[in-house]
Amino acid sequence: LPKTDPSGVKKCVPFLDALTSGYIQRTCTDIVVTCDNGEVKVETLPHEVEMVKQRENPAMPSSENLYHKEFIWQRPWSIKLPDGYSSLITHPLNRADLPFYTMSGIVDSDIYHHTVIGNIPFYIKSGFTGTIKAGTPMFQILPVKRENWSSEEAEYDSKFWYTMYEERHLDKDDSYKKKFWQRKNY
Image (cartoon, rainbow, N blue to C red; front, side, top):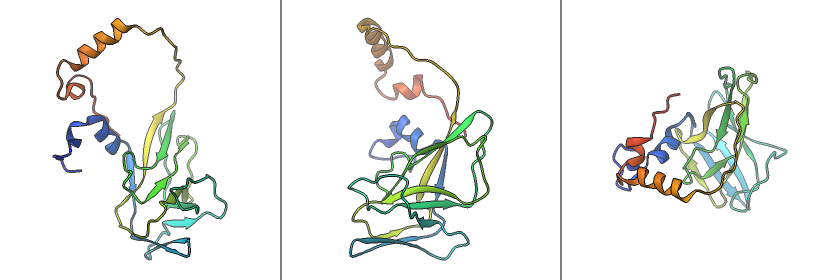
């Protein structure tokens, strides 16, 4: 995204954090999607690694807004993270504009990594035909620290929440960014 976006994206720090967090895998070649008599087909330009294959036995169910054929993104590398970290592999966050939907999964990438081509399932959106250009984000990888923690329920305390609201909204513009936001480094 450009640094100044007239739609206000620049001010929405949590949205930008989601777009830029972790790692983005992009297509390295154009991908052509056609549909003939209801049969969706995906072809890639010649490349040293075949980026897309069809999965014969779908691993995930699809929805009515997706073609009912599962494809897989292939990657000729594996994810290896430090001890105690998993990777959340998901559709690029806040990218509803893409003509496909990548399924999400969590892999314990500190202890499970391999050298064969990895497969990440995705579906093409119903009605889409055309070219997915080289450089299009395919999926996003977010490192997640595994650690035990506990949660608890508490009674609603209106005074506490009112005080928190007032503190956080005294400066209406960029309050979150100025007071609470922390840079994320990967």
